[in-house]
Amino acid sequence: MKRIIITLASFVLFGTAVNAQTKTKNGKTKATKQAVKEEVKVAIPTPAPVAAPAQTPTPQAGAPMQAAPAPQAEVYDFDKYAKVDKMEHNFGENIKQTPEGVTCTFTVTNTSNEPVTIENVQASCGCTVPTWDKAPIVPGKTGQFQANYHAQGRPGPFTKTLTIRTNRGNKAVTIKGTVEPSPMVETPPTGAPAPANNMGH
Image (cartoon, rainbow, N blue to C red; front, top):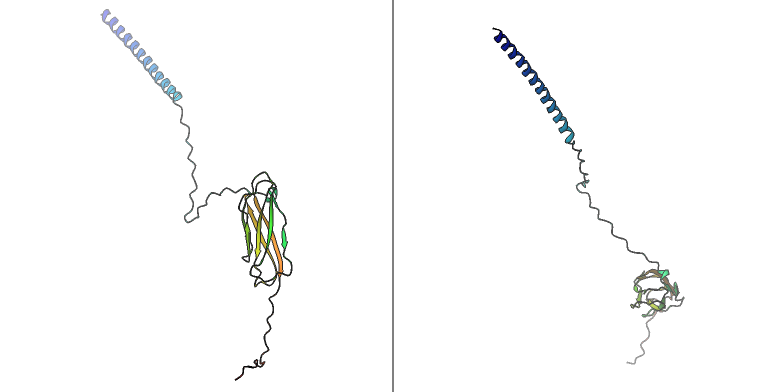
């Protein structure tokens, strides 16, 4: 009987110890799982928020497309490269109304260290016809251009502008003068008798 009691007591003590060990293990397991969760939280960084891409404004329907501005051409100062012998030519007040008109000459001198080319001479009116030297004017040398004014049928004073366009800037000059009036043609008065016919019969 004593053995049975001792055996039962040992069994109870053993079960209690086992339960205590199980609880301890369970507690350790829970603590281990919690620690693992905490480590995982620490190890995995939270992803940074991704910024939304910038949106390009969409042109409204029917709006005209704007082209990119064209590069500006270099602007030259004519006076830094050349000079004209005169800025104005006066033909005077007694210009005859002839078919050939009147012509004057302007001289351009290259005062720089670079070639100067007369690319065009443009008159302000079709009654003035310009001509010019096409060859480049080397430094220190001269070139010429002419202006011919068609005076026939244009009586009275006139002033015309000519614009010299070169590869080193532009320059404007003027011509002026006064064209004589057309000659008066005498006509017989109205009702005057016709000249007599002196031919014999």
